[in-house]
Length: 218
Image (cartoon, rainbow, N blue to C red):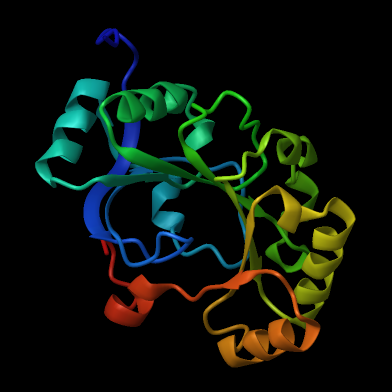
């Protein structure tokens, strides 16, 4: 049982959609988007989550998630780990029997995340403007079921990501995802580079944007 007196989390939105990214792409998923983020990436598409939202207790959040009758739950942001009680939320979701993933920008410590959670760790590239914020120690605590994501703005980002992959043997730790920034890097170009270089990565595009564009809550 979880203590209902725990401070409320600031929630930007909770919605039901298809997972648009990661190895779970296409699966019906409930998304819990937490308010707040310490980063300001150049390509951010969820700046509305930097502020606002509403306070919700763990029981209120769990009740809203249950209403959608989904097996998969993704906790995202903003940067969800910027709220300390995010760890309690992740644990509560796991305890409730959901398969849970966490989308994190990689600047905050992930060592306290429940081991059942699939951590999707975003390594910030030079063109993101936030490369210096990468907390490299996070790589040591990743599990085989976690995933590492590079969001790429241009060919220089691709070359950098390829070097980081090699230096840290990332594909031996867990799945590695390469994704192009919509409108900045051609998905076809990225696909061609990956095939040319025989990279052991999964390329992804954002399914939700192909289906619904920039519509919020999808």
